[in-house]
Image 1: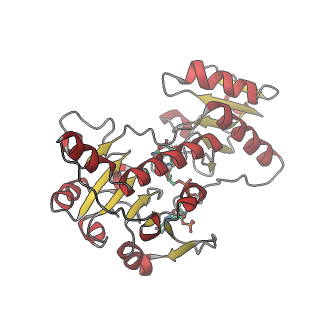
Image 2: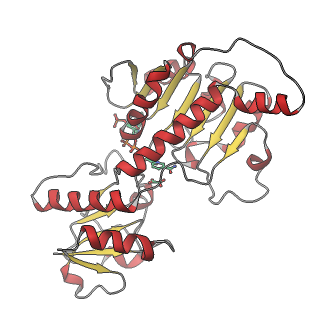
Length: 310
Ligand code: NDP
Ligand code: OXD
């Protein structure tokens, strides 16, 4: 059994290769393009698949994604049929997402951008703040990452709700399931956090109609995928005051082109897909654990269900 790593980003060689080598040191670990005999390769670790992956590895059993979201693998014509796919569930990445979501929930909750602008303009108004207990944070997609945000937000007293396909029993969080509850979920959400996987069912789910169902003045945090949002629908909702602001980490085109209207809009905060990144030290250990689980004949956490698309 040999594990092949396919570097993709410029930081992979100096960062990921040593981390994986350390975690997988006692296994037969190879780095593309030094693959050796293709028949040895039973597992591939990487960010996506490439044209030669479809037919080159006669004994390939599993692909271990370094990304949490796996739509690029699933939609690729190069994905080798019959090979299992495991998505990344990394404690380092999870910590990053928790921090990102908490940072923007608090920023929107305290209306920091408006008060900062007012103060800079010489305005010094006093107003009675809305308490966290009067604010509902709704997780659109309440899986690993959505649920991981609960312990950081709960102590502030926010009302929390999550929308998912299957019912969740998380203490203190109202669970909404399936398309039939989508509208009532949105209608009661003041700060919407999108953490859905990108699938045919979830693509374009943030649009004029659905965002229009949020209460007036609501906020959007999209840390999932750019294709969840119909980009052209957002600015009119912000300009009309229906939405109070949006923090966007992901876009249909990345990097977001210079001159894109999101860059200049006063109510949009653009971050460059940095909300949560797989951390080599912790991620490499997860790859190790997944391989051990697979070698033991079991399915590791994060095994992708091809029928569901995530
Ligand atoms: P999970 O698979 O753990 O959670 C996905 C959640 O979405 C689940 O609750 C699932 O329901 C729900 N869901 C999926 N499809 C539907 C649907 N059609 N209707 C209702 N609910 C649905 O994924 P993670 O939490 O680990 O990650 C979520 C996404 O975040 C990733 O797919 C990725 O795209 C994105 N991401 C973005 C990053 C960034 O840097 N911006 C970093 C990491 C991830 P159920 O629980 O019932 O299965
Ligand atoms: C991921 C991402 O899916 O970085 O891991 O977006």
